[in-house]
Image (tube, rainbow, N blue to C red; front, side, top):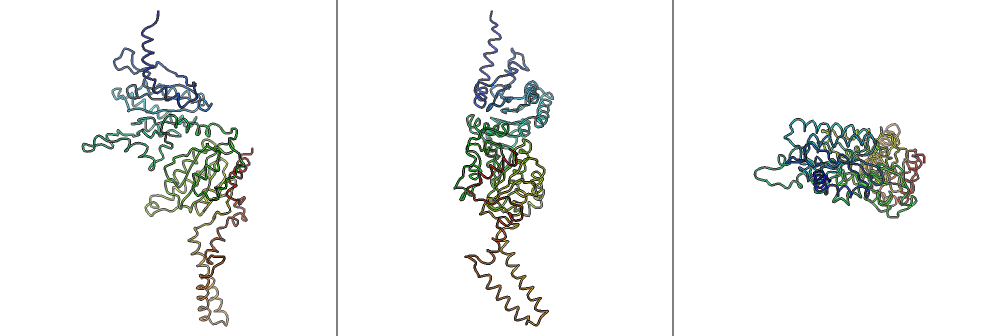
Length: 492
């Protein structure tokens, strides 16, 4: 005789979890998801406000062939609200991930706590967040904010190694109504106020955005391929040359051209755009690339690069830098606020990192940009420069001033020398002023003396002759040379 109560429960549970399971099936390998703790619940089945599956689905699967553990909050059951039993179910999944040494994928979509449980629900939140810190020391944690992440689930999400945020999601530690609404403005467009668009240029709390499950699956595949697969079959010719690199000035295009095709996923793509950080493959090997562009690196750019370098160190992924920057330029307000600490933090992260490091000057490698992002002294194992790169302590404009000052210094020394001889000092002074005037107008192959001097000082061959640059190459050959250097520093 069939157990009608059980069949009814199964049917109700399947209906309640169908949407979230469909979402999971779209982001993991086909037919690989296996659910755990299917019937776990903190409420009896005959309760009027039954929490089917406790409003969260847990299990394990493979992603790109790599095993992962997953939990996904189910907004269709009590709006994904957290209870003590809900927290315990998630915590069990986290512990399984740690015990098996497999990554955790968390999917957040919760309206907050079931406040009627009192202190027990607060203990549940604390257990999850404390567990997330333990998790981060053991296995990768990738968090997906699918819908709503409010209250301490926002804190939980921020503790993950990587955060993907739906373009339609919202995230807030406090109640959104508390933060952005009042009698005059209610109702409020929470997505505009607390969605990804609000965060993207102001914070690096969400490193990736996705449009739908298909888009998310593609991006997850790229990230997990880099994080979990140290070596694979090359999908692209390591000796491929790209003539366009002679003209490319975009950091994103340069990164894409150097790395294996279709392997690049950018980290915080809309935050601090002058510093482009990407996970990718090069000759089938996992790499992290920092490519700079524009004039100067901002405070946000320094923080973004520091965080990225720390991620590479945690996952033992080699660092490649493509440097085109005049260094750092801060306002007085930023200086007083501690700009020096930000520059120090990035250099500390790079100098203490143990991963192989390859630095490449592809444009301006000036001042701080050179010292922090490609110098041998900071820890780079191999360095290259393109033939058109500029390697100098200061920018070209400042170099011109220095050149002019040195011309004047010549006149000053000549005058001092004249005072010890029979040369007419007044006549010499007049002659030197005339000399300075003439020399400032003299052109050497179409360039003034100051410009010629500045270019001579910034020529990458000067740094190469001093042993700071291993080779000077044409930009079109960047990929073959970097690919070869990567094999060398990895000892492959």
